[in-house]
Length: 91
Image (cartoon, rainbow, N blue to C red):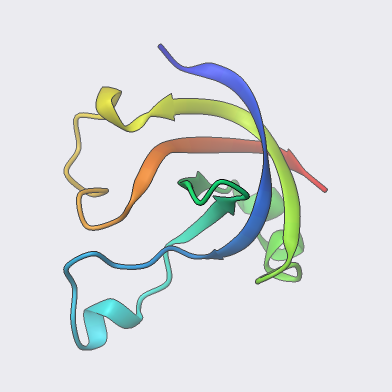
């Protein structure tokens, strides 16, 4: 089940596992933790601009985490995401 979580790591574009060409150039924002795990970030419009100012920097995000196994959509199959966080705040 989804749960409250806090992650610290590098705010960056997640690497594509299979895409090539222009498709691989699309940035899907995520956070790479210190142990090398990637988590996709669902960023609300109200936080988006502030977070973009911290691109490629170390940040801490808090929100609701859904493990990747519990997501029925295939949209994350091309990324190394362990889960998807609905971001509530960042610092």
